Structure formats: C-alpha cells, structure tokens
Length: 173
Picture 1 (tube, rainbow, N blue to C red):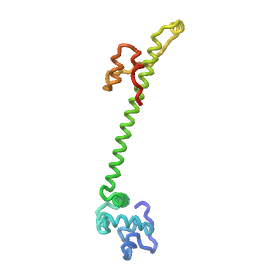
Picture 2: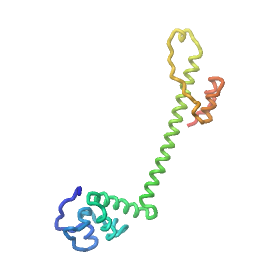
Picture 3: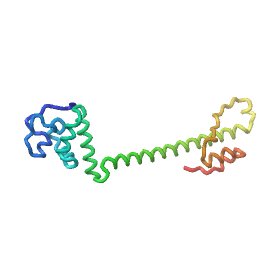
Picture 4: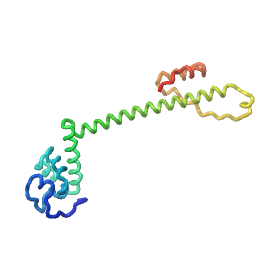
C-alpha cells in the first residue's frame, strides 16, 4: 500500500461521513484519509459505501489504491456530466485528436505544395542558360513525385505542358 500512513486516533473520511466508529481494520482507512472527506463524499454519492467496500474486497490489495483513484475520477466525472461521465471526456479527447490529425494532414499537404512550387521555380530558373550559369555547377533538389497524389492541383501540375502553369495555380491557405 503506497502512501499508507498509520492512522492517528481520528476516523477515516468514510467513517466520518457515515458517522460511525472507525475500526482498526477498516477497509476505507488506507485509501480515504481523514482529511479527504470530499473525495469519499463524491465516491459515496455515485457508487454507495456498500458497493465501494465490495469492490475493494474483491480487488487484490496491491491494486486497491489504483481502484480507489479510478473510482474517485469516475465519480467526479459522473457528477460533472451525469449522462456520459468519463466516457464524455474520452469522446471529447478522441474528437480533438481526430481534428488535430486532420490539421496535421492539411499542414503536410501545404508543405508539400510549397516544396513543389519552390522546386518548380528552381527548375524554371535553371532552364534559362546564362553565361554565368553555364560554367557554374547547379545542384537542384529532386522534383517530388506527384503520381501518388489524388489532389486535383497536384494532378494538374504533373500533367502540365509548361513550367509557367505553376504560376496559374491559386495559392490556397
């Protein structure tokens, strides 16, 4: 039992709330200290003291602290949202994760487009020979492969007949 401290003469939070004498082998005492009355009150209101004691008796002793923490979290979530409880919080987080993944995909797509535009501009400027460029070694980054993309603008750019078509694509952000 992590964090278990020997009790002083005061009752545990459960026995205080239930207004009963706290016995030495009280099932609640190690998990609901005397200063945690609100924690037990929430758990008691949602699950009931009898059900909580049955749960704690069934759970192995090394898992009881995690069980009490889980019950306290569920009770607080259930009091905040009586219909969905902690499932509502989970659904909200999952929805937010999907939105963030979508935003990430959009950002990656925009980055690829900017990279493609920069590569096309570099390729366009390299096709016009000048006396200085003829004698200089020019290294250009590889042109991205658009054949795997299904985006209309990417297909349009890939099938274009001239490099100037890149300037006609609207800049969408």
